[in-house]
Image (tube, rainbow, N blue to C red; front, side, top):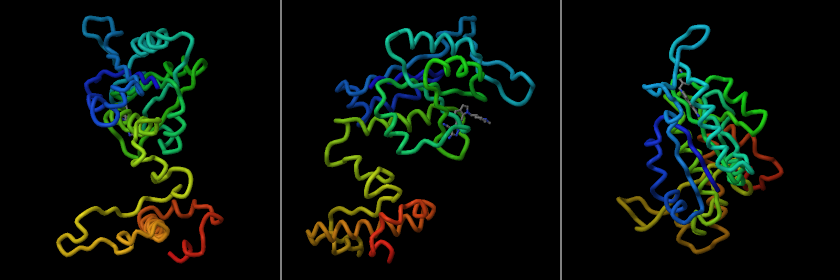
Length: 247
Ligand SMILES: CN1CCC[C@H](Cn2ccc3ccc(-c4n[nH]c(N)c4C#N)cc32)C1
């Protein structure tokens, strides 16, 4: 997968050089290319923002530099088209389902803005040619889109074949389709079996895989009921067995 990111703060993406995403880049699973938006702002100050038409607080990112930058990225592979992802608090929620959809795309282009966002004509210009998604990572307001890109790149990158070892399969993720869909993960434990008077639940030491699986599902249901009751409401009743209903 190829991922392009256009930003005035490309240094924000240094974390993409480490851990599993960094290793995926080294192994050629991920090809991440960063672009400095100011390279396409040709005035002496490389200006990328201006006052909003209609008045109001803050500044708006000028269409000119963004248009030239996106054109330059698209021109690197005229035979293909990236999916453009615009981080914004006004976007559709970024979910595990959307991460899985993006993980099947060969090329993503992220356009994290600053200030009050990008002049709306920019995505109108590209929306007739490529798929443009406005996506948000939560109901709170950040100062810009770079953090959202880090979140989305990690959530998508970890789903790519070969990025996670089998031991860390994304299949068992919270929210992943299947047995754990719409369920939060339960508690986890490791050695020692007793720590400061706290013992590991006996069932986890039993070696009985069926009972362990049952216990883990019960704990996932309990945690979901406690922390995200609305997810339980979304569970298909057909998918709940008799013991599930007793939680
Ligand atoms: C007061 N104004 C309101 C509009 C947004 C301004 C800051 N900003 C500029 C660009 C930009 C991109 C993303 C986000 C953002 N915030 N929350 C999320 N889930 C996001 C996501 N993805 C925020 C952003 C601040």
